Length: 297
Image 1 (tube, rainbow, N blue to C red):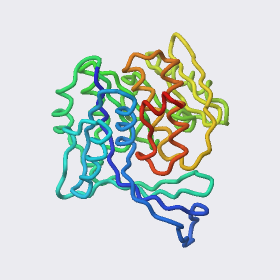
Image 2: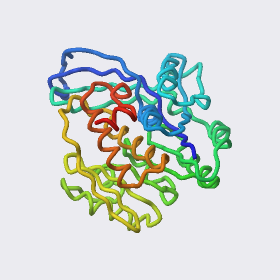
Image 3: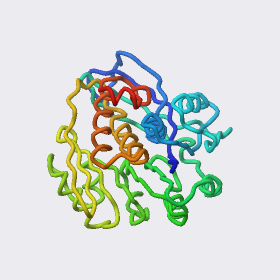
Image 4: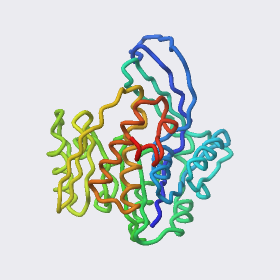
């Protein structure tokens, strides 16, 4: 089996600040760093570094060609990435505060220029049993999910960033929901309070009975739930520097572990270890560890 990540490719501009800028405030940053990013790129790199045969599909502008090099260096096949001449690559403005938390402003750019013809041309190279990993940073998601479902692909959805478009997707086709408490509560239309993650996972499973749910709960760890079993996974303590790619790392290593034949429990443990390493480093894609490093941690 192989995995296709059909997702975003961004240039990340990361500003180090004492606190997040407020309405009407002008704030000087301590530093600026430029990284490759986008949830799609991050998850492709995590999948490849977790040992999965990984292909990336999406769109960039001419200014984003270096992102292809980043993917290729991580072992990702980029033959299905389209380079557009008239649209800039998507980008993100990231504020990273002294506690290591972040807030992000996105510009879609080429990520919002995916066409149905492009989707058809990519998906014809994949078959029943292959995995499709999606996030919410590109357009034509519903069409991609419909066509992938027709082909019998396993659909993994990380509904981030969460917005009203998610409710319009054919969520019944999703085989694995990869989400946090806020995203789960928004899908269910209810509030969340801290450690209620297990109940939220059950709520998603009650609504989508044929799916599996992997829900991250911050310091409370994570939980996997399907119709047969529930597995809880504690966090691995780490000195947090930057949380930007922690969730993407978790997703990539969990799905990568499944593709390599690990049990659910083993995949959850490896994903938690990988995420704990990622938060100790600055940047998105550059913070993602490789399989050897995670295995030795």
